[in-house]
Image (cartoon, one colour):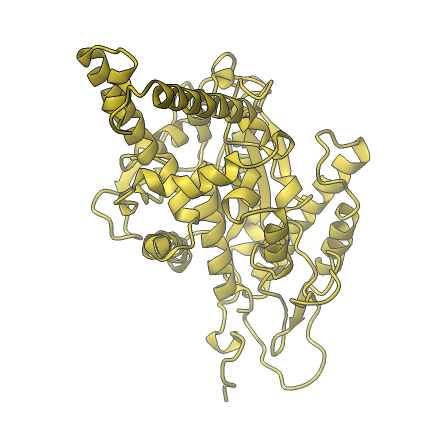
Length: 472
């Protein structure tokens, strides 16, 4: 969020994500031909080391989706509905990382209310303007001007950053066009990378508000690709079985018994979670082998405010759960594909696929049957030290998410609030608990051998899309 410059975040990310070879990162800057942007670049890292054997990393290309220039005409009052929703609630329902900020905000509001009441009793204020109130309490003109300037500066910072989040998630007509434009740009980038035909695997990494945008883009593109395959087309007879589907559904049902709100998993629960993630990757490979073009294997979110999405996307948890039940918010693991809008809630791990004219294919809500979701965050300690806007996603988006609290990178990751912008600030810290170590581990840039069997796969047939006419 905020007024980011093109490539500003991408350069920092590449420094964090790409391992060094003999003390340096070996990559090139090349023109980016997917989004048709004059300012975008593509960073290319060849296989290192070259030649046979296990690589430190395979050939990797880095792209950036730059969207902030589309978020214009922000106003401070755009923040008011969400601010009011966050303030008018009990302390037990306030997001963990925002509790101290919530208390401070209430103290400031109560102090201002007491000040206004005192001024009214004294009769010393002529109007309820900021300048009039400052002068009424005895501030000199110069001090009043400085305070006014500071408040306008803070207003500008809030408008250019936090309002981005609120407006992107806002469903009012004023924000509809910009939200649609941003989502469309994300889908176009992902679709363009798929259409290039030169890539074997795609990993989507998103920070802050970008996690919402990436989530929406992945969901939209999956709806375009989930039922494509390489044939054959049939009018009758059972479809070929999608290898690995039964094992994944069984693993998903095991995760359904995990408490979503616990912080520490038992060793058995950790084993079941990692087994599910292994099944996701295996099922992705099966889909590719039968001609599905989907390349995304991993979604990695960092410092994601999705941990209080029930307050940002909706008014309360009940409305959020209704969207989940209606399959408008894909979960990890996916919910049952036989879930109706009304009626009893169905469990996860059932009816993930259907017969699409000759192939067993995954349904439209099954994005996270093949995409592993990893969430990294600097944990807020004592409701104050750390990232206020990042947290655990399992309670809202499913027990198949791997939440990892980053406990290294001291003292920077404990900076109150400011830690939110420091996830790509430690490229040379390779300690076990560092964000650099954890990110590189989950990116899996050295798995060339595991991808060898999905390099040569059949091309999907357009006629296999649901609703397409039969071919002769």
